[in-house]
Image: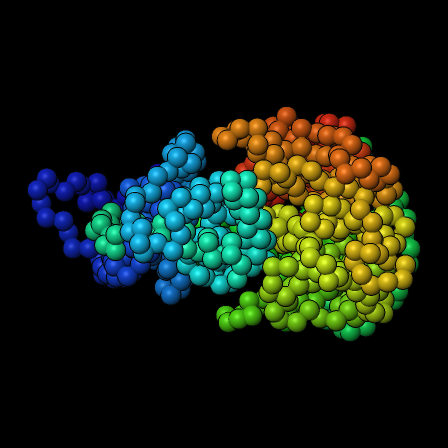
Length: 190
Length: 419
């Protein structure tokens, strides 16, 4: 194989330490502005989504940060900028999946203790909420994702399908199975 | 809305509210050179040999008349792939993304179907490529008769941008005639069965072994499906069974988890008269020639799955062997320990006993060093030879015979296939 032509010595030079960074190209500026705006508008909701998946605030923030960095890196490849939110939601779910695989989370999840919060404002009692969340976190990842997207974000089947990269019919199947499992789990604890 | 829905919604919202309404600052890292990305290169690497392998493109656009009637064909009519007696070729539905692509989530579009391919069981070679007739844009389901040359495909239109979320669908008959002259070896014809309107979709289907009838479960945008339809392929006439009893067909369009129509949710016995289907945790057998229209009173239980007490346990698929003696399914058991890996078994029930309990565990699928078996794509007459799909990673397929597994040449872009 022929060696790649690096375009002369300039391509091999290193910036001197302390020198100012060169101006970013216009495309990068546009991408940074768009991604930052989307972050300001959606970050809290996405961190909450990741928190529901992981039960760990710091990990949730990391996953969302990584998802937006990924969106920034791949901005040029986004065929439809209006799909950026769906893209980043997908990335957050994928990041949650990876995080769950990488650590032995089960003990932390199942022994997860939510803060006391505002007991007066709560619709559910604290014990009942913990019980539901423990059951939710025992579901298979994909079922939990579909459930959270439906019952927390209130997304329609078609949008859940888009975010998860699956067919709408499969969304309904996953939610149906998840609700069945949840019902069994909650029956077993009541 | 049920009390469970309300409770779940409240628990999720209250838990999410533990996160304060202010996010930490975003720290963007430098972007790599976009030109380094290799995804498009990988696509070209795949599409080139596939394109080169295409021998026939058959796209006979949708006519409402069926070309000729389908005659009974025996299971031995087609050529076999030694040494297992599995038909020599299968029809595979192709997707634009592999399971790995979806896991890596490189873009936000839903996985899409596309063409169907006729492939060799033995080599995996593409023998022909079948494009969906316009206005349909992709095939999303396939089922095969036992004659090795009759397939029914479901084609669907473009995904609508607004509700209802399901595009219209239509059944197409694919006939293969290896003895015909070149250019006439395949015909694709729209079946006279009514088109499935937008807002509904075919979830499961199975063509009878003699290639004359199609059992299908078609559902609208609701969780619960209560109807089973059987179409005469030649005339399009339809017979439906339903019930007012509480219950549900399962699994619904989820056997492959994320792609296509189930191939092991509905199945026929070799007499092309009895259809097996899952109803809650039972498998029931419906006599489609008998009088009556109630899906429960006109059918009998032939198997009951008893492994679901922990809620996380699942079973997938329930295929009756053509001889009618056995029901085969795959169960996933997670109750061996909170953190223990899922154990998957290939389980059989004898239809003669109908005691409810599995009569045999045919395979510990984990012992075959496979994980996440998804669908039973094919069974021999007595169930001793099977074709299963599994993820490891991406979709793969294997022949299972007497506890031994033999991988089939397979493309990760195949979503589902039928023999």
